[in-house]
Length: 168
Image (cartoon, rainbow, N blue to C red; front, side, top):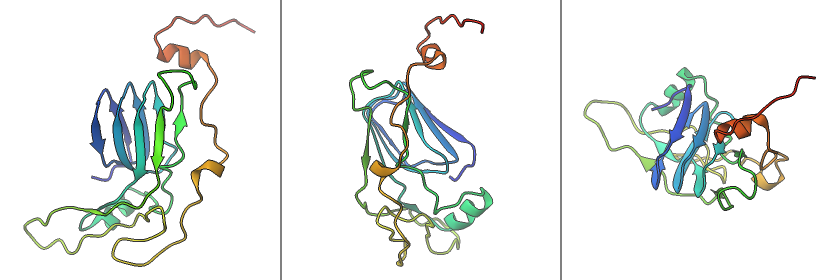
């Protein structure tokens, strides 16, 4: 299912998922494998052992679903993970990126005439489902995005600690 709404994974240990989302945020998750298309920067909070890979699903009408949800398949930000954890929280590393090219997951045929499966999202190497290529996205290490946030009142609140803010 393609959705332009947020997709929140919460307390789902040792699971795998194939979400397509405008936004993905995990909290209190452990040992997840996520094959992801995300229109914005995915984020993790108080989560560890998360492995992200590029979304590799295909089914009839998927390209049309992306259009209806107003998602640009060429702008998959799955490698741009924003880690709300400090480096010492929860035993780093909190997440890893699997940039290898995996086989396509193709939905089993359904009754009715839905046409051939398709997927508009390019693989990490730029290959497209059904053949063809596009320019692969830049590698994640040189992205210039921070890999963690400094402690902040919002971060402390996420850990259910009471924080007093001073008036300026």
